[in-house]
Each structure stands twice: as structure tokens, then as C-alpha cells.
Length: 92
Image (cartoon, rainbow, N blue to C red; front, side, top):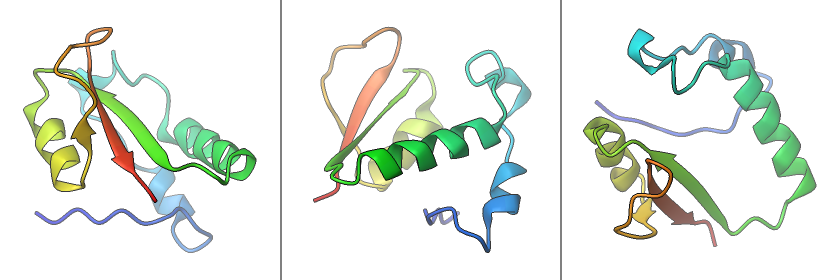
């Protein structure tokens, strides 16, 4: 399986809003993806000098960990913080 990250744009925004999580992930990500898209657009416009992206995932979510590593996200620490492994991606 190949994962390709693309910016949300006029050509793909509707398809992006239709993305969902698995039922067992709803307790972690209860908000519809459209909320996350709106937030990302707001943050990007207000902070165009962003040089890194920080994400977190549950330690038992090995699929997410492997995917983030494949995309270049490195562990910020070996410590689990608030129940999550924190990863960083340097963008510049």
C-alpha cells in the first residue's frame, strides 16, 4: 500500500471530508474529519513559517507508527507523553 500526502485543494476537498476512522478509533477521534481539515487550513494561513509538524499516536497503534516513520516522522522522545508517542517531521 502506498500513502501519498497531498494538500487539500479545490479539486479534492470533498473527497477528503468523506474520510472516516475505524469504529474502534472513534473514542480517540470523535470529530468528523471536516473539523480537522478546517483547523489545518486556519493554522496554515496564520502560521506560514511552520518548520515542523508534530503528531502523536497510541503506542499500541503499530500501523500508525510504521506509517509515520515511512513518511519521515521521527520520535521526539522514547517517553510516552499523555498516552501517546510523539513524533516530529522537520519541514525545512
